[in-house]
Length: 279
Ligand SMILES: Nc1ncnc2c1ncn2[C@@H]1O[C@H](COP(=O)(O)OP(=O)(O)OP(=O)(O)O)[C@@H](O)[C@H]1O
Ligand SMILES: [Mg+2]
Image (cartoon, rainbow, N blue to C red):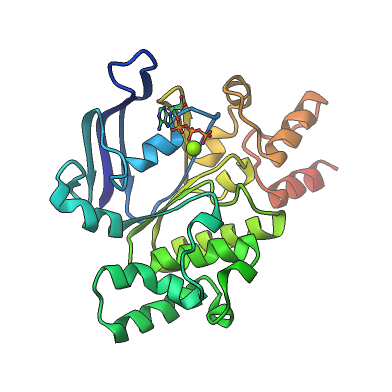
């Protein structure tokens, strides 16, 4: 299997040598395989953002090594190629859109890469199509909803032809409709375009969509497994102050009430099937 991102014994300290020194990441090793959809969850301050900022060289390890497609993030000669390969989308859509028209915004990245004009036009159209925002291409970004703005921000990353998109709580500021739009877009990019996805989220129902869930606590990886395996460890998740996906919570309550519901239930469909069989 092809590894796209490798962390080897990575630690990160903020304010090194000062009174307020903080160990934000502590000796983390992990591999991310091309095409995976990974969700990273963890309590506030557990180190999620610090971790992913290492994956596109926004931060460098205090000790240890990060390789992106085999390129060491510490080597400044690799910086732009790493940033192109591993694009990043942040929480606040308003801070990410810079141009006065949607299509200009999406063109911004490839323009900076010095891509020829004709190819930029192609890439912009393709990227807007992938996030289903083509009909808004002449619109001013500030007229869009939060979910639409995030989709434009994602298109801006796609236009750079990345292999991996890292999203740091992209739905945190969105209403339920916007959240759904963005999550569906992310899922589609993973399934259809085979783009590796790393999604940081506080919404457990979003993490359920991933192939693999990483649980962080105090700068360390506490769990790294399938959503089904992670979300069956309810008492441990509670100890880490994490929410439980709604259906897993319901399954747990039903078990307490004496129903025979397996602890691996995660979706409404699975729950419906179990309840129909037991009635
Ligand atoms: N620029 C910084 N300077 C100093 N300390 C920082 C900085 N950024 C983060 N920290 C600290 O590092 C630790 C990890 O923070 P980080 O932002 O990575 O966590 P997080 O899991 O992303 O949190 P959240 O869920 O709130 O986004 C926290 O203790 C935080 O206060
Ligand atoms: Mg964060």
